[in-house]
Amino acid sequence: MNKIIVVVCCLFSIMSLSAQKKAVTETGDEVVLFDNGTWEYQNKEILVEMEIPTNTKVFEKDKKSTFLLKSKKVNVGFWLNPKKWKFNKGKDNLESEYEFELKGEDLYGMVISEKVEIPLETLRSIALENGKEAAPDLKVVNEEYRFVNGMKVLLLEMSGTMQGIKFSYYGYYFSSENGTVQFITYTSQNLLESYKEECNIFLNGLVEL
Image (cartoon, rainbow, N blue to C red; front, side, top):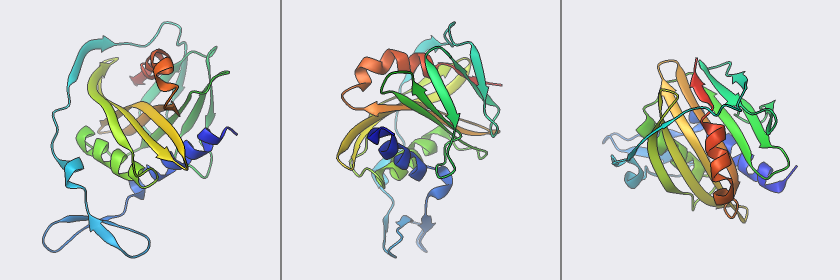
């Protein structure tokens, strides 16, 4: 297996929403708990309410995306171009429901789904905070709200370094009363720009069923 796949899959396994360890002090401050018994205050900068721009363009699934893959946890589906993408169910040691690979290329994808509803702003903070446990230099490069097939999603582009590998991931975050979905593509930092169009076509296959 390609080394970047192993590294980034490890990051995503850490990013499961249910894996976070947090607590509230007697004075009401939120703290993060670590396995070695230490703790630190939750990053205040991450939790500050932000003005995230909204892209006014309407995003729809591509006509060549003819295969509908359905989540078993949340009432969403993913329209794929079967000539370009292959997929597998998530492996037992990871939190992903599905994993994807662009055939013959170094672009990968993943679906993480959970049944709990989470506000998108909170989901952003959780994704970034948990991701930093594996890649301390992880940062948001670009973010915006989009309307994709009638759904309001948060687009996040993040970059970081893990085990010396510089990677980027680019994906949609969606939540409703039926659950939460992280639909994400990832590759090395030096390749993301060349794959952006392919990423957008792939991600725009997200639909609510």
